[in-house]
Image (cartoon, rainbow, N blue to C red; front, side):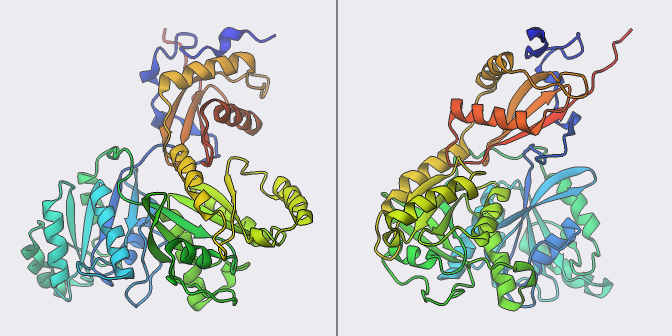
Length: 475
């Protein structure tokens, strides 16, 4: 029988004496679940078509952000993980900022402004070959009033002949213009060094997000996303047609629901073979992915009158991998008879077994049936997504769980779980500090018990393991 003391949450053999001895950065990963540590964010902002997304790709060292020779390709703010000189941080790409934008442009500007207000540092990108425009000056005025560190990137300085034009950007009042060619990489390293100088080690804590919560309506083509948005807005905001694929660009709309404003985004339906798509379909799929990344909660619409498909599963995978809270709306419920309901119950048990935590609601977008029931489901999912458990409460619970059900033996040794902390919210992410690897089955067991104790309905929960090898005793 295992000695229960082996699983006390504290020091072991005099090696780890207190919580301060467990620094997250000191631990290796178990190879699953990614990094749980919150990272500071640098937002890349500027007017349309100055090369923001190209600069983002240059910083990342890979092609992630969508780039095209026409303005307006980027519409939502999208974050990507980056590493420079051993430091990890997030790079947030934003749509072009226009001070007097209307319609969709206004929604894009709101996202850029949100990025400026919530980032830990901001890089304003200006086209040095054009010089400071009225829009550049308007953005600079906003940034000069901000307490957030700001760097000015003079882009498209492909050679020394353009250096003098970059120097003219001192007039914006944001300090030294840092010459860079995002397309060719010239000056990118110096800009990254400057970013790290002003970027804090840890991100600012903003608490609950301000403004309307962002909801992405996602699903396969012709499942009723645009019809639902039109029903919620009581208008023809989104184009609806029986032909699948009518929506190409994400459609933003502020909706008053349950006495509050929400920012709903109607997205293009994802097709079976996104990798083989070309032209506008390719960019539509990328923008849908970006809309999920930019959202706080996703509403996955599934046609309840038809069997759950592989396309439904692919969209679900994208939401889960993005770590977004989730509400599954079974649409066209007015077309479901008793036999179909019984079959659907079996499909849910089989095809949606990996997201038992998702909130569910049955609706009819065309008739408006039960669409108001989305509000409590959205609230529950978002509350769970934002939830934080105190370290003391978490470790008290964990001690009792481990005492009753210790981790299984691996390689002839029983791993010891020493300490736990919630490293992040949105989604809730927990780190277990251990002396050995924890089997995936045991982590699923801990997740299930964690949900039973603390809730988290509607939100994914991530449990990461940091393994620290036993140190040799000091002589």
